[in-house]
Image (cartoon, rainbow, N blue to C red; front, top):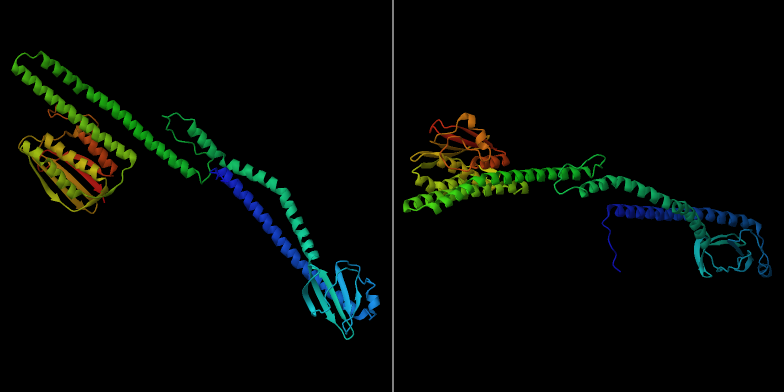
Length: 442
């Protein structure tokens, strides 16, 4: 028969407490039995010893016929008294059907006879041997009665104790049931905090962690809603432009007009592709934030070298001089893929806004306060009044003729904040353009 193991905390507590009460009752009964048996041994041994001493001087020798008369010399039927002459003849026996062996060990001893065990005390004088015996079953019976008297009240109280235990356990677990009902009755989009009122100290940390999880999920859910809304808004414009360019291509009659329409359509597709790529990058970053991607030590200087190498061809197409001015050895605890995206976006943003023939310099400086990555360019820079707004999604500096999605700096800021780094924009004193600085704390 397979025993079903309960996973209910209430059931386990009740069963464990019932077992504990039962074990305590049995242990108490066992202790009471052993204590009563030990006390009975001491009392009856003393009684037997005193009886033998009193009979030693009072009982005269008589004939064997008198011994067969079963003359009682004590009123206690539990005790068997026998008197033997020096030549081994029994001269007295109390009114009992027990026949004990003739030979006796002086003092106390246990003898097996008549299917039971007797406790015997023997004493010898010059003219007789007095033997007082008692069936040990009498002592065990007395000890058992005392143990049952001890166990009886406990057995009567056990149902009451179990009712009290059930009431206490159920009352203690009531806050847990209340939390379960609160969570079960919620709608799918209800991510508000669960009440911690009245919760036990052992359960409160679990609910606190649950509320923190709800907070993280709510943040991710809000970010997803904002992302979807922003993406839909931003994709509407390029898609509408693509539709107009297709219609213009259909209406074009001359080869030159068609060539212009095709070029515009291709440029529109490239802008839409770039926007979708940036949106996917942003979505992956937000997903990694919500999922808690693992971190590891990252060599920032090595990552900067790889980013410069990957974008060297893009810079060469615009005849931009790009280089790594300084590359101190330093590690940052973070996500390698995210940090590569941060470095590529910083350098790509500088290349994009730097005119042909310009310069882009990258440097990695390791100091006691942390590791600083600086990207400088010789482009137009960003006015001080716009340097905070450019971190907003899809925001672009008014009057800029460079095509973009307005997501590059937003992605950079999101990754920097996730790594505890500070991002600052300023003016490059050496090149005259924008200086973007990301400082990772030590």
